[in-house]
Image 1: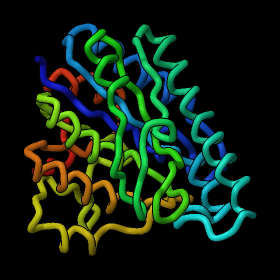
Image 2 (image 1 turned 90 degrees about the horizontal axis):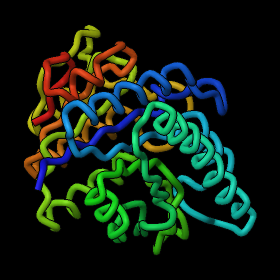
Image 3 (image 1 turned 180 degrees about the vertical axis):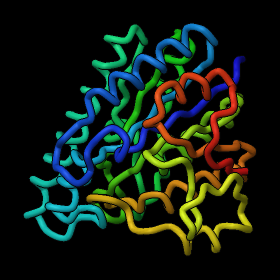
Image 4 (image 1 turned 180 degrees about the horizontal axis):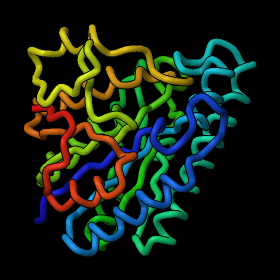
Length: 264
């Protein structure tokens, strides 16, 4: 059974987070091409997740559903948030198809249940079967049913954490997680890239991480680092890198050094 790679395309990378519902179409097309080429050339088994950027995050903020349902007046916001997240997802899927990849779309709202904001149940059967058939599973940040809150936002970070545990439980080896944003990894207070971080460095790193750019209801870079450290505790290292650099994704998927922040 071949090793797996998890690849996250950050919402700030594929959308203009300060401008509602504005995809970066050229960036998405380039990333799709790099993913398609690397998948063909290296035969790596890959799972892609992407953020909702200025699509789902804006809708979730406007309806106030990020911390759950408090009244029936918020129900239209659930539908709108789900719809906007799916709209960006279709753009990503279509770009991957055009690039020659074999994406298989999976909506977290249809396969995952959370409890007080933490994913607890994942119906992973379709994803595992898609992998076995040589397809490229693609997931995204979404609004999901929540046993305690009514609904909650499941970020790609939360999704990757429960997905990693599920894959390991089914005997798969997850070799690495690659997190792509629009910075050269994690910056310190002097705006220099931190080359490596582990659990003992989190408090120091958290003090240097600023607020997310644009609208973000899930926590931005700090949330990403915390999740990468959770994966490291499962034996899965991560790399935080800059997806705006042409060719970086392709080189990283080939196993080449590309800079950024290693999380171990």
